[in-house]
Image (cartoon, rainbow, N blue to C red; front, side, top):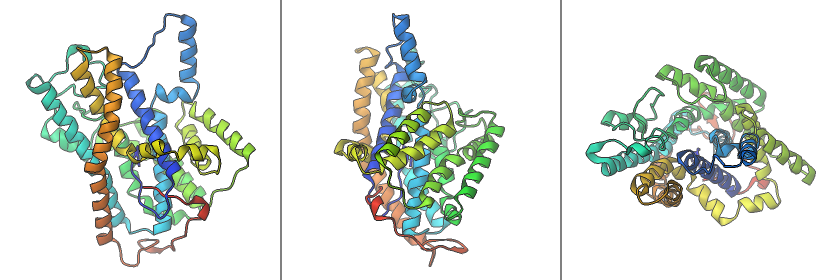
Length: 399
C-alpha cells in the first residue's frame, strides 16, 4: 500500500490506519520539499544550528531529513492491511491476487510517469534541460530527456539505480512493495507460526544486505539482479506487518501501557535503523487501534481524506513540485515556489485519485473475481484455510 500503497478492500473500515498512511505520505512530501529548497538552514546562530541538527537527527523529526522512515512504515502497514484482508475475505489464489494487485498499483504508477513525461515535454520542450539554477534542486528528476523505453520501464517498475532517466524517483519503493506483496497469500500458511514467518523475513533481509552491500540505506541495485535482492532485503518489513495481522485480535492496552508504547515508538522512529522502524511501525499500528484520544484524532475528517488520497499524493508530488519550481522560480523565491507546489500536489493527488486510482481499483476487483480460483476462499493453492472473521473491536475498514 504505499503510500504508500493502496490496500485491498475488506469488510470494516479502519480510518485511523488510512490517516496514518496519509500522514506518512505528507511527511514524504514535506521532506522532498525540504531537500529541494524549503529549508532555512544554515542558521546564523551556531547554537541554533546545532540544536536543530540534534532535533532532526535524534528525534522522530528525523523523517524530515530522511524520508526513509515513512517509506518503511508503508511497507509494514501494507503487510498488515493486506494480510488482514486475506484473512477476512479468503485468498483468491496466487494468480488472481497477483493480477489484481498489479493492476491496482501499476495503473496509477503509469499515470504518474506519463504525467511527469508530459510535463517535461511541455515545460522544457526542445531544450530538454532544466535551467542551470534548478539542476541541483529536483532530486535528479528531469535531468535527461526520456524516451519511450524509459517511460515504459518506469511504468512497469523495472528501474535500476543505473538508469540515467528519472521521471518519478519515489517509485523505488513501489518496485519492492509490488514484488513482495504479490506473494502475500502465502503468508496465510504461517497462521499459528508467526515466528517462522519473521525468521524468513530476517533471512531475506540478511541476504539482501549481503548482496547489496548496504544496510539501512538500500534502495535500488545497479542491475536487475541486485535490485531483486534489494527487494528481498525488505521482506522483513512486509513480514512484520503480516505477522501482526496473523497474530489475531489486538490486546486492549491500559493507559500506562499506551504511554510506554508511545514513548518506545517515538524512540525507535528516532533511530537510523530499519529494524527499529519496523518495530516502531508495528507499535504505531497497535496504538492507533486503541480506544482513546489518539484514535479519535486520527479519525478526524481531514486526516481520513489525506489517507484516501495518500497513494496518489505519493505518486504525484515530485513531478508537481518540480513543475512549480520550473514555472515560478523566476518570479518567486524558491521556498514560495515549493509552498505553492505542496498545495498543488494535494490538489493533483485528488485528481489522480479519481482519474486513475479509483478506476484501477474497480478494474482490479473485476479481474480478481474472474480469476478467483474455485473454492479458494481462505486458501492458498493446495492448502485449504478457512477465513476468520475480524474481531468486532477492529471494526472499521481499509480502502
